View (cartoon, each protein chain N blue to C red):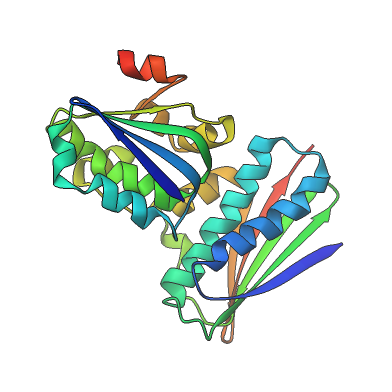
Length: 137
Length: 109
């Protein structure tokens, strides 16, 4: 079973996506903490696409799809633009250094990677897709 | 996100109500950036009505923590919902920031 939503690239739509994911997960008998973690992981990726990949251009759209198969939750976020983000270059930041220098950003993907079992990026033509997976036993 | 303030001679309490994300975190950043905040002894963050926090919200606290410490201003969180505290714990921020159960505990820090 798949659920999907399309949003324009405005950060006000982060709430729309969180509600969409939350409503889907509400029927899955998961704890509040786990539901919040999954919502957060999707929110972080969507925020990156809206703010960094699309510079909040409301003419651009993102598609968010949610699936569940054999206890594995899958979240797919598709961006209509080719991303320059390279997950292979990602290194976990040193939070004490972030505190020392007063850095505001940079912990979103750290959250995503720690919450999800798998995080995959693929770029095909002008589309970038991020897939997040979490298996619950 | 609504932010309600209560100030005494030594303490500023900010009660956060709603969701702290990439859209709303600028409001909190503006409050924590006010110069007069560094003249207080304690900033207490009441999280009872804080239903959600993303990296953008965490980033606001991370970015001000050193400035507060340098000015001897204590930053203390209290009444935090389990799901919100869990987000701090995922990153280990609960060991870098002071999170206590209740307002009374926060007052005693």
